[in-house]
Image (cartoon, rainbow, N blue to C red; front, side):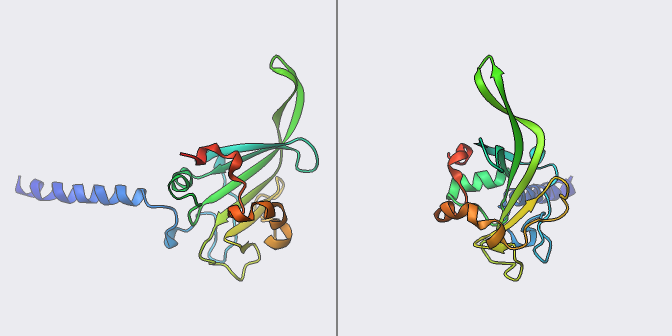
Length: 187
């Protein structure tokens, strides 16, 4: 009986400690990102559609980037952004580009929907500490990656300034992210 009275407070403290660790932001250095190697190589986030939260979508009607752009991030990232108005260190943003088709439906004419045709994925990982200054896909507070459907194992971007940054210049003052399509970020 005396041993049980001693162990219950210990168990309670251990439980509180574990719960506190689970609530820590994803910015701890020792757990920066599961998608980044020690040298800063960015890997494709497998099963992101199941493990991440859908922030919002864009629709581009014409051109090479036409289709639906569905954007995902971790739930902890959404919660941190709602609190601080900033993406936390280690946050992952995945934008999936899908082909589209349009047709006439009971909801109207020219209604577009996404198809199974995957075009590519853009992945950004927040790095406010400049951890990988010698790696060409890191800079301006983010790691930048592009993955193609036929080679998800390799980042097609080599130099973020040449391969990625030009599309984000209008969002420079907003940490390079167009947040207006992500109402989930608002409280």
